[in-house]
Figure 1 (cartoon, one colour):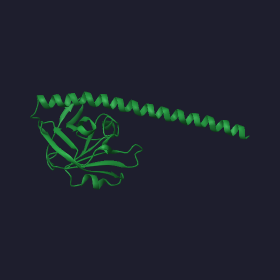
Figure 2 (figure 1 turned 90 degrees about the horizontal axis):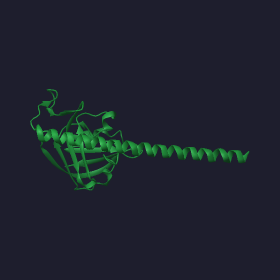
Figure 3 (figure 1 turned 90 degrees about the vertical axis):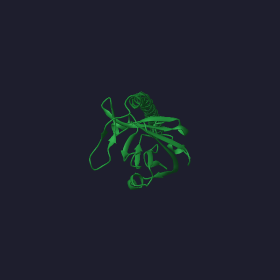
Figure 4 (figure 1 turned 180 degrees about the vertical axis):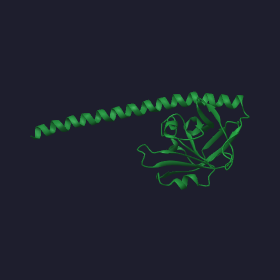
Amino acid sequence: MRKQQGVVLILLGFFLIGCALFLRKYNLQEDTEAKQSSAELLKQVQSVISLQPDLPPQGSSSAPPLTVAAINGYEYIGYLSIPDIDVVLPVMSDWDYRRLKLAPCRQFGSAETANLVIAAHNYKSHFGYLFRLNVGAPIQFTNVQGTTYHYTVAAVKTLSPQEVDAVQNSGYPLVLYTCTPHGATRVVVFCR
């Protein structure tokens, strides 16, 4: 009886190792696809900026107009540069889980109103290394009109997913965030 239990446990162990290897491969593939997608979209966003600096504003009358560029059926507000983690990424104007697989997304606010919140997956090619940023690190956001906003990291914190108000109403002009590897908490970068 014990021998049979031992065999079952060994087989179960191999099965679990196989599942872990499959998940690792899947995550690496998703990261690679996101990197390729973002790189191509970044070229297109930068091209729009250089060719059409006077795009018309979009948005409702209750909020300041948000200028966007439409590319491949999605709208973009510009691109983000984080030199200390070697990241330059396009930023979509709205977020949902499908868009997050392509590029970082604006969740709230704008650079013009000094309350921009940008979310991205924790892919290594996106915001996976936000936790490595130090206070004082430079970050730039260039909108589709070609205006570049310069920021520095003021704080890097780990927050729970329920601390939405701390992110959206932080008082900082730029907030970047992503999930930690297991999704239990968020890495949040507050910028001046």
